[in-house]
Length: 96
Image (tube, rainbow, N blue to C red):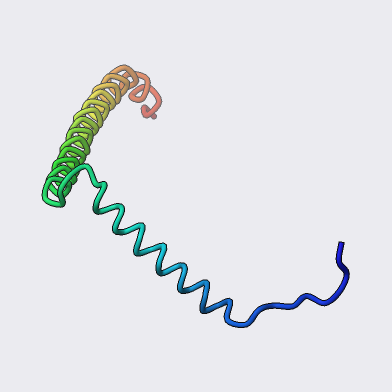
């Protein structure tokens, strides 16, 4: 184990940036060479997936609207039924 001052070498930031840029370039080149699909096919698949997601979301929205309308209708029917059942009691309480 050495004890002493830490000595840094000059130019480490420039070297690190150089290796970073080289790594990015090599990674981009390998990505393009090893890509399983062409850019056109990839864009087409992405667009198709996006359209499918929009259609699914639209279907869910329509179903939610239908269910909400059903619940509102049932609630209105229940309120009307309760109002009809409590009307005689209400009329009795309002008499002077």
